Image (tube, rainbow, N blue to C red):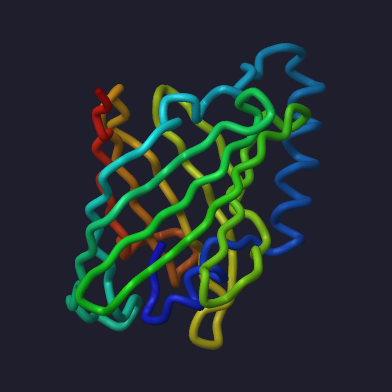
Length: 195
């Protein structure tokens, strides 16, 4: 959830077809070898169902050495689909660089025991290839590989500090194959109380 342009955001949370199919095949092989050691994670996102107040900051020019950040405030609404095996996220925020609307369709693969995060921007109008990952010990980590500024980079998206009323999101880029990571998207969601 980043970028110097909103349209680029949708592309950034994408994974190459090779990476996605490779991760799926590896997961299936490992699951077959390990028997039932993989846990059922189809309800990993149930904590997030509802309406949230969102505060985020985004690094305006990632991987350039720039320290220019833009801040935004708004809402995130998360709806359960297929009894928790999928969910739909609508993010709408306003900030220093304008208005941003993002949609994320998250799908659980019961064979691979992993989630795919599929993101689109209202300015782009199409879903990218999914970012793939899973939750372990209360922390979600999702990885993809994509083109950025004419080169391939790794993108990591982490969900952490999960409580009933708050959660934290960070996105990082790596231009050196994962040796170092630069955070470029930080968001904190606080649940909107009803009643």
